[in-house]
Image (cartoon, rainbow, N blue to C red; front, top):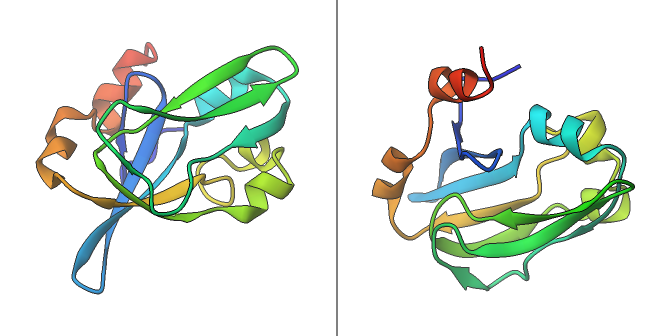
Amino acid sequence: MVPDDRMYTEDHEWVRVEEEDGEQIGMVGVTDFAAGELGDVVFVELPEIGSEYSQKDPVGTIESVKAVADLFLPVSGEVVAINDAVVESPELVNSDPLDEGWLFKIRLAEPGELETLLDAAAYGKLLGG
C-alpha cells in the first residue's frame, strides 16, 4: 500500500507535510515495505527534539530481530516532536507504519527538497508495481 498523501525516499522513509502555525511540518516514518523487510521491530532510536539535520543525514535506527537499519532524513530541518508511543511500543512500526507508527516530526528548512523525493506512483514503481 502506497498512500498518495506523502512523499517517499528510495531508502523507504516517508514524509507527510502539513501546515502548522504557518510552518511546514513533516511527519516522518518508514513505509509498509520497510516494516515488512525489517521483521519484528524490537527497538527504535529517534533523534532528539531540537536537533537540526540535513537531507539524507542518518538520524536514528530501527532494530529488529533480523537487523539494525539506519533512519535517514527525507528533508532538512529541525526535529520538533517524536512519537513516544513508538519508543515505548516499537512493534507499532510493524502493525501500523503509515499512521500510529510514525517516528518524528520535523520543521522543514528547505521545502524545495520535497521535489527530490518520490511521489506515490514513482515509489510504487520502485517496489516493482
